Image 1 (cartoon, rainbow, N blue to C red):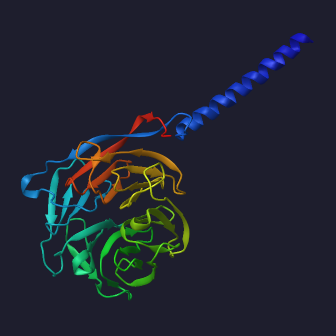
Image 2: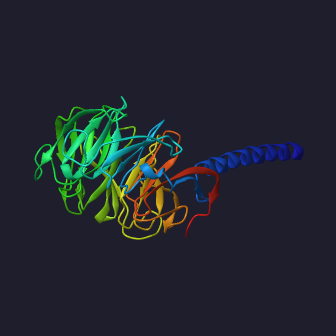
Length: 327
């Protein structure tokens, strides 16, 4: 009888140990505090582009499966690169005509490969194929009516190819069809839910939830595609989950959310605002940033950062190692 009891105990212990091991492995793969957080490493630094096509000032970057697009704020054009930073082509010059720009700020791309540019000082949106052929434009200067802009900044496109535009000065978000037909708008100035205090960039996830970098309110807000508020996270500070003037926001193919702020940090969260990882600091060295306003994540998970103050693109990849959680 004693031998049977011992065998029973051993069996229970073996099962318990196996379950515990599986649980620990699961926690590790999900970046639990028990093992540390995800670690990102620098893989490219586009600090020295071709002199003729050198990036002057950048407030956003668009990373697709095959190409990277940069709206060059001061040179009033769009630059297209390979994924490793080799220049391919550029289009645009300063002006008000179709295909011309006055400080292009942000870009997004739809399911058909058409790119949209917020032509900031021309108070309009322009649409092109991905080689720069002009398609259409829409928008006029105004104080908040349908299709009116004062300071169009961040852009995003949902699974229906509807286009969202954040106006930093009007503190609203407008939604359009891919042909520029107005659908709806929401947002006012303030600190309440669905209000904004300046917006540099926005992005959208696979379920068509929109994320807004609410810069002056030091938070991220999340909305449905119809503009209904669902949640927010963040407050002023430099700890995990806190922000100091968050400017850039991007969503990856797994609906994780990346945010960069004035501390020079990039923070990564789940779609519900749970902290996953952090890297970067203020400065001019590799892996440091200066007043960065935009970032994007390509389909392979590489993170492209528009390092605004340093006039360069930096690219990061997820490492197999982890880093210790901050206290």
